[in-house]
Image 1 (spheres, rainbow, N blue to C red):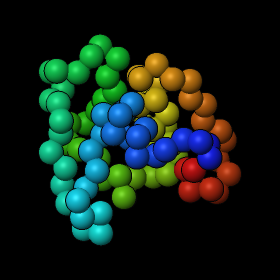
Image 2 (cartoon, one colour):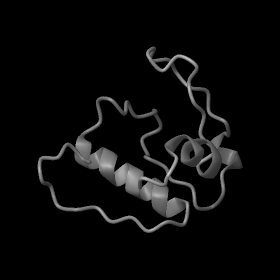
Image 3 (cartoon, rainbow, N blue to C red):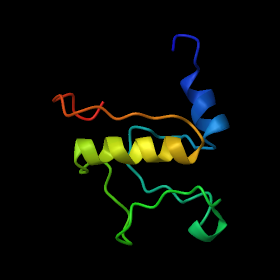
Length: 86
């Protein structure tokens, strides 16, 4: 992991966007709408966007693992260990 550049992973491989003001919590406009996503897309269901800051840590860990799997990566979740979903 010491050789991995987090910014390059986020912006390059995951096509994410960085905030110009990370100290402010602002809504992020999606880069793509659901109809434009590949067949390997992940949906959290329910219709409303989840509040990631309020999400249960285990549920968040499962969502992140599903996102990695949808990108073709291998992800394994572990049993609850009071690590806050890390």
